[in-house]
Amino acid sequence: MLAATLNTHLSSIKAQDIELGTIDIATFGANVDGMIIYKNMTDDTEFMATNRITNGLYKVIADYYPIVVGRPSIGKNGKGVIVVDPDNLCMPDIAELSVELPAEHFFETRNYKNGDMVKFFNLRKFFRESGISALPEATFSRDHSAAIVRLIRFKDSPYVVLYVSLPHVIFDGTAIAAFLNNWAECTRNLNNPEYKLKYPPVNDRKVVRDYFDTVTAIEPPHTKHFKDLGAESLVKVPSSVIAALLLAAPDIPAFEEQHLLHFTAEKLEQLRQDVDKAQTTNLALAAVLTKTILQANIQMFNSMPTWSYVMFPYDCRHRTEVPMTYSGNLSFSAIAPLESQTVLDGSYKEIAQAIKEHCSKVSSEYAKSLIYTVKNEIGILFQAGISLCNLPDMSYVGLTNLCYMSLYSIDFGYGGPKILSNGYFIREGMQRIYSNKQDGGIDLFMNVKDDLFEYLKKSDELLKYADIIF
Image (tube, rainbow, N blue to C red; front, side, top):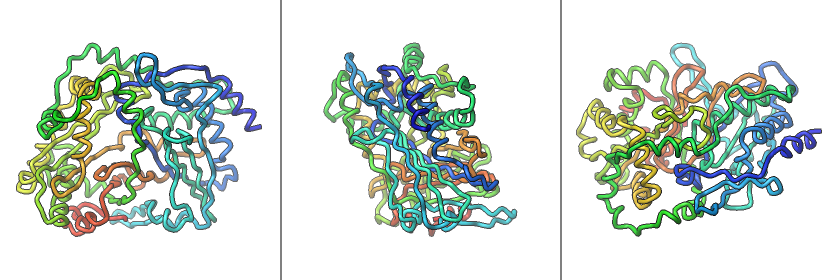
């Protein structure tokens, strides 16, 4: 019955070439992923049933996201496209995994002063002790699926983990959150074959091209910085071959030295008040992380880096006329190149202000310039890529705030998730912030080398506000 239903869904997919945007192809080789943890509160024997979850996935793909089962290629005009061929679909890889231990074995639990008992999923312990040493990642580089789904069930436990990995080239963070919610909405309404999404996605990349055709580019300050570091001396690549070059990029491996800090709502507000109550919590946190990671970097390498970089991605949907339901990549990076000595000598308030001057003055004019950079000055992206990391000559904080995304509303008909986590994600120095519904605080997932983290663990300034989970 399930196979017949799925075939019915897939048979409605039409042959099509979906042209990718410039920012889409710039992300090729990276993934967007998540681990969403649900709890069976009613002893439902069909809780998060694999057949039902799969059925909902195929329906949302067939009706709204055929790009998920397409394959990347170069179109006749030399631009990147996703080719959707009904006779050669890139089928999702969906499986159910069983762990012979209760989920609770992998939880870290903290009791806070306000009485909240908060649970955290220890991914590193899970991979060490569950019998599952790794989870597959979406890829176009081999004959694997571009969509990976795993439903992980545990012995004698009400918890189920939904793991999802999708290629960044078709979704940014905002778009994957919408995709997951739309998948859940379709699953909840499987009994109504005529059901339509309340807010269907806008998939046509033309809406982005049309908007930016009306915008005049303004070069962001960090572009000149990377040019001065040597980007202009790199070999120039003709714009006509940029798509082919980027779509040939290898997969970016996930960084496995992941750590987790938790900030209660009270501690987070204390941090903001201590740094500068006039600033946002995001900027205040970035200031503390920038200085403490620089200090740890100096201790580990026994040298002073020249530059301390801070990177904030920002969602351009909030700054343009592009619909909020746009399903492609529309996130850009604002980067603050700060002199390390200035960071070390400055107060947190001064550091926050310096970051703000670079990273808060974002606009569609800056975004247009970054699109131009991908097309015409790819060396700048290369220079940025080799600069944004923690090494003797540089320190780095890349802070992605996912708190504004609707992740706790991903309800497949069994209630929303209880815990948010993620698999390993790319790049050393990157950090992700999730809201924690259990106590109203935030979880900070940090891609930091274990050796560097040993020094961070000794930072009194950081531990004044944060609780180390693992």
